[in-house]
Length: 398
Image 1: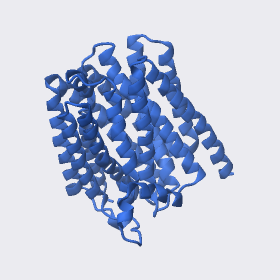
Image 2: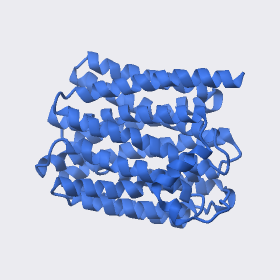
Image 3: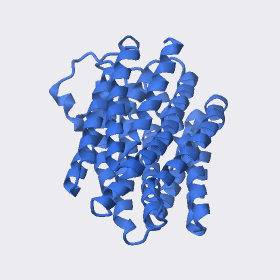
């Protein structure tokens, strides 16, 4: 693949990830201004994640049949339509409906984006790992910048933030289609044609038995459990600083700008080093342990400045986890199953997101610290599963 085309793909992905996060900092304001139930900040995301979980394997399977850049366009337009519904909602039912529609299509966009990188780096695992780190950096720095932009737009109005999101998402999808390469020639197309049965999202889960291994099952379990912690922490922090500290969406945006800078520094140094110089099947465990320790410290020290500082550090370290688990998943896939494996990976990430966001929303009203306790427990469990994975991996390697 031509280097300038990959560069353009990353530029588009940066803008797309920015747009995907325009609405997050203004969601608490939307809930408060429209007198919606406080649990909506978690329930709405859980609804989106449920559809993400359900449809990611289907989109992964579809990536084997049609160009991934076409799926990026379809996903982007559908995602934008769902966010348009969400931004116009004045009832809990409309909020949930809009988020579910967005989840159905955003799962397609992000699954296709990951598969695009994997399809063009099939024969070089080290290069694939490096490109996944770059993609993760681009997406997370873009997402953090998107929080900042969305927070500033939210000072004007919630509606402005949502309209900007819809516009940039659609433009991003069109740019993927027009400027990215067709990956048809570098992937193995299945012998049988896509049938109506394959369109059923549940059939994609059933087909997972064709590529599942004990090590892969453990990676997926770590991904899902860690995602519970990540989403419980992330969603509650955004609402916590609005509810407990009275901070506007602009503060949320500024925190994300700090995360963007630190993420760029860590991924361009530590992330690349781990992928190129270490066996990530062993070193990924240190990242999980560090995330667990950082969240645990928040349960001990409750100062406002410390609380915010740890969130910034944790969010940047947490980003290192994702490309490592993606690379560990794709390394155990064949050329024929790589698209399906990544679809399943995205689905497991969403499965954890469902429970993390939903439980966080439901237990927050009981005690604002409960979601952070849930996040700590989830990361602790994922670390313990990581210990089991590492032992099994070392046993299989000898």
